[in-house]
Length: 234
Image 1: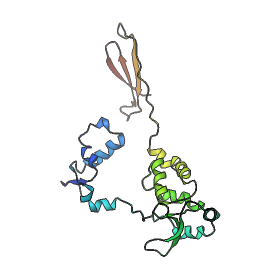
Image 2 (image 1 turned 90 degrees about the vertical axis):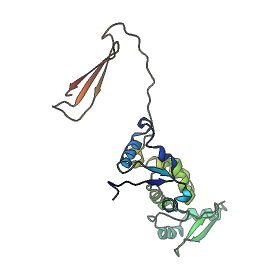
Image 3 (image 1 turned 30 degrees about the vertical axis):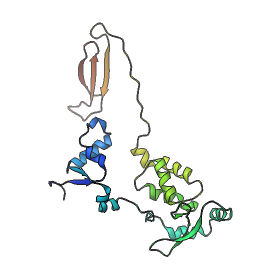
Image 4 (image 1 turned 120 degrees about the vertical axis):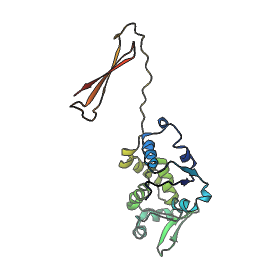
């Protein structure tokens, strides 16, 4: 529907308007792929304030009382009735304001903490990781962001350490996010006085096969900076 059409994208994210003007060497490989995909349709991006972008802005935000549909709150309410940890919290005089709250558009009453001004459901132990997965799998945020999001919406003892542990061991995050960037320090070499006194070698590949060759051996003579590639089968 959008292909072969001229159109303008209006966005309230101002940095996006400069994305196509910057040099590609300032972008990560993921950003380059994303910009390449967008450029297949248009590069005409105009910034507008969020107050003028009401329809799209509302669709991109999660209301404070909106919860993931994957969470079975009826089951959580049933488990709360026999949760010993919850009963201990209520009896110990905790700083949490634990009260039963009725969800909007629902007759379900669930025990929530109201101390922050927002109803945060108490999650029994057997449902905690499922609730975390329902929230985290929406966009796979980082550890600190995951902890912040969960503490905004739910409550239980040790929520910070539990969420940090689960986010750290998320397989999808480990596959797509780079947490360690190894940068080797610059090296210095002695000056050479004649050709082929010092030659740098590097093997490139495997490459797409061409006439049976899949590698390329590169040689650089440091005296004259001459380069010579040589095809190699292995």
